[in-house]
Amino acid sequence: MSVRSLPPAVTVRLAFEDGTLRVEHDGDGPPTDGVASLPGVEYDERTETGRAPAMAYADLVAYLDAREIPYEDDALHADALAVESAYELRDYQRDALDAWTENDRRGVLELPTGSGKTVIGLKAIEAVGQSALVVVPTIDLLTQWKRELGTEFDCDIGQLGGGEQTVGPVTVATYDSAYLRADDLGDRFGLVVFDEVHHLGGDEFQNIARLLAAPARLGLTATFERPDNAHEVVADLVGDVVYRLSAEDLAGDHLAEYDVKRLEVPLTDEERERYEAAQGTFTDYLQQSNVQLRSGSDYQELVKRSGNDPQAREALLAKQRARRIVRESDAKVRRLEALLDRHRRDRVIVFAASTDLVYRLSERFLLPAITHETGAEERRRVLERFRSGDYSRVVTANVLDEGVDVPDANVAVVFAGSGSEREFTQRLGRVLRPKEDGGRALLYELVSADTAEERVADRRR
View 1 (tube, one colour):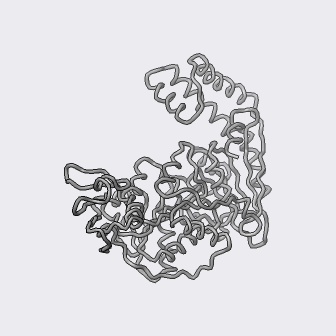
View 2 (cartoon, rainbow, N blue to C red):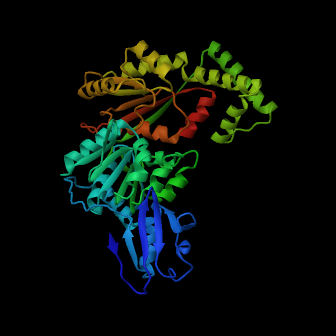
View 3 (tube, rainbow, N blue to C red):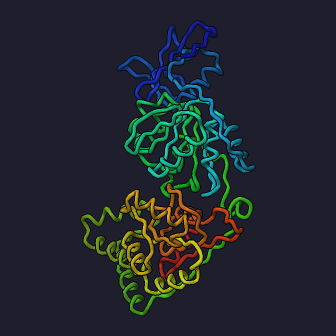
């Protein structure tokens, strides 16, 4: 506990309690109208104290310091941490860390896959010098961060998630586990690092940041913006983007040079007929019902309407049929066969749009498959064989987009994808690690010509 003993004879007391700050005071209060006048603090009649979310801690302390209001701080119990990583930062990594430091150690760094965001996170932990929490979206990332932290830092590494609940000077937690424990542990860390910070925009996960008192906050991501605009909430919880580089910015010096090639493939006459019929059913319903789809929320409203509107339901089913036709056309399969033959000496990752399609392509071309149904041990075995060269290609849906340490590949084929810019960026990032021979990376997009898929491909570019 720290005590500031400055005049006048008024003391504000701060304490952490179940993910909130309890704010009490002696005398008549600060030089305004009591604790409720402090930033972010509301008066709680039940306890006759002020209350604020734990995340208000840094702003509240800065306010009290600036006005020389004496206070007792029993809200933050972060231990000192003396660790040092052997990594030497590259110029852009140093610039990114400096930008975050100059922004009062708050903010998001947007850097492409393969640029070394984890290294920057390690250096941030080293620089802050207080117990730290690293929050990650997947068990794979939990394992990778814990392994990296254990290698670089001479201290115990705690783990929340994956069957373990231990807290150390540095602790790694999944978003799910951090959400469950933040109200209990929110006063234990001086720094929180949110890896793949865009996940923090989820309704429940936002509370992780609100329940933590940690003054220093670092977000790491390759793609900050979310289609639902929840990145604006993330900026309030962690800070704005303070440093941003694209894959193009780093290509050649720190990442592989790369090319993106769109290959338009035609539907067969029979596929075209089925596609036009299904797409027509969907668009006719939109016109007859005067429904406009301008955003994802508009589409969700249509989904809700389909619950009691048989025509809306049939329109959505028709849309699904049309989408499947263009995503899984025979011409795409033939083009993929040609690409696999052309790149038989390369390491290739094929990205499909669904688990069913992954298994179909796996069976058709005898490709090792990784989906959300693949067990952890089997996934590890497939990736190890891909890394060793026993396997030269693998097919997956969105499981390898983020949160998995994917071995070096130099060719990616997007057999089918969504309109998400994040998805496209993450898949491109899987082939951008520098090559030993200095070669270029290559990403192919297979797009069904003269269909809605062309517009989708435009959006994800």
